Amino acid sequence: MIEKIKKSNRSGRRHFINKVLAGGIVSMAMPGTTMGAHIQSKKPKNIIDPDKVLRSFPENMVWGYFGADVPPKIKVKEKEIVEIHSVSTSGIPRENPKSFYSDNNLPFDDHAKEIVEIIEKVPPEPSGIRGHMLTGPVYVEGAMPGDTLEIRIHDIRLRSDYGVNHVRPGRDDLPVEIQERKSFVYKYNKDRTKAELVPGVEIELKPFMGVMALSPPPEMGRVSSIPPGFFGGNFDLKHLTKGTTLFLPVSVEGGLFTTGDAHGAQGNGEVSGTAIETSMILVAEFIIHKKEIKMPTAETPDHFIVFGLDPDLDEAMKQALSESVKFIHEQLGYSYEESLSIASTAVDFEITQVVDRTEGVHGMIPKSIFTKKKFQYWYA
Image (cartoon, rainbow, N blue to C red; front, top):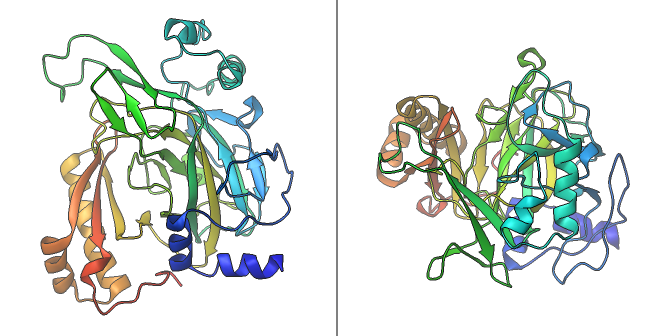
């Protein structure tokens, strides 16, 4: 009976999206316990029971980089549901991390203690590479160089009752009036649906993972998690929420998936340099496709998404346009000229972020305009 339920739940993208949007997927299977995996009990209603869990213990964290030589913290099979815990250390001083909680009238609870332990025990990369506090990598059995790894986002849950945003002067793209460095703590309402900056300013929480990456190729060595690349990373794409899918090219055996930089909410552009930086849980499923892609792509219930990534924003826009035209031509079957016409009349090009060294533009290709298409999984 369990096998029948599993097969039904994982039969394809359309079913996946419909089930997630409807409020959850049937709980499944007996959990595994591999390399730091741990199962929690007493989950709230509609919370998916994972097959494996990777907790944010110090030994499961990596500070600021990706690399083919980074040892995996957990091994998972294709189509297993994996729960990955992340933490945000944003705004917490390394010298006296406990002071952050007292200074901001926040409880020094178990989650706070976990963050402090991570700050105290996880070392930075010896060469000086800096970046985000990340969880992973996850080794996906069967993923090989040249494959495409599909990451289905079944759920994203907030772990804390606050998030932090920073304002820092000095960038040449900021208004000259910004003269003072400040950090703002956004506190969530009891339902964790809104975040308050000051009385009268409430931001709707729309959680997503800012960083989702596979390892770059071995010849690249270790790379910072700050600039995104063809292998994924710090996209800061606010559309990658519950019920969406990211596709990344596999460069090393097992893929080595790493995540972090969780955001409670963010505007396109992430113009101050940060979003509402917070701690979250990602619940994901990994699907291997024996087809090669060169650039990441994504899918929501309503759109296909393509990426443009370059240190020059104009070049990022050119790449996003090129990827849009290629996608509409190669995946949907229209001529290049028809594809450019469609891109000009229906595709929205949005600035993903302008603060990560490599800047981002994404193209939002609406499914609704293709009235004769029945969209299944487009790499099948």
